[in-house]
Length: 231
Image (cartoon, rainbow, N blue to C red; front, side, top):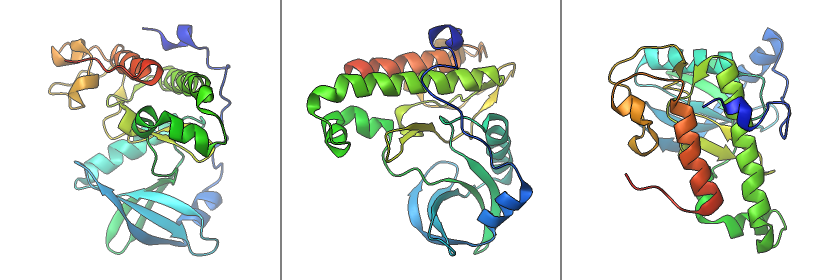
C-alpha cells in the first residue's frame, strides 16, 4: 500500500512552484468575474471565472456548507506545490457567494479519456497506436500525484476518474478535495463513491492508509485495460 514504492516521487512528473506571495494571490482574486455555471454537485456549484485584466480563466466552487469550504481549502493548502494537484488561490466573495478559486483545467476528465482514448490521441496529433503510451504516461502521473498526497499525510478519500482532470497539454490534475482527511483520521459514516471505496472503509475500519491505494488500483485497471470491476 505504499504508493512511493510503486513510483518514487522524483520520477515522471516535476513539481510546480506555489504562488509564493500574498500579493500574487491578491492580484488573482481582486479582478475575477463569474462567466457561467459549469456544473453542480452534492456540495455546491462549480463556475468558470475570468480575470477582467487578461481574460485568464479560473474555476470557482461554491458550497452549501461553510464548514465544507474550510475543509477543502485546508486540504488544498496542505497539498499545493505539485503538478498533479490543481492550484488553489483562496476564497473570493462575488455576487453574494463565497467561492473557492482554483485553476481552470478544462472540461475533460479521466473518465472522458478512458471512454474516448483515440479521440484524445488525435487531439494531440498522435495516431491511435499512441494510445497505450498515453495511457501509461497518465498512469505514471497519477501514481506520482498520489505519492505526493501520501507524503503530506493526507488521504483524498474520493478518488475516481471524474475527480481527475486533463489539461489541454495532456497533464493530469487531481481536484475535488472536499472529503480529504489526514491518514490518521478516525471518522465514522465516511462518504465517497462506493465503487472506489476500499473494503476497510465500507466495513467501517477507518483504515485510511489503504483508501487511496485501493481507488488508485481500480482507476489504473480502467485506464490501462478499459475493464471496470463490478461490485
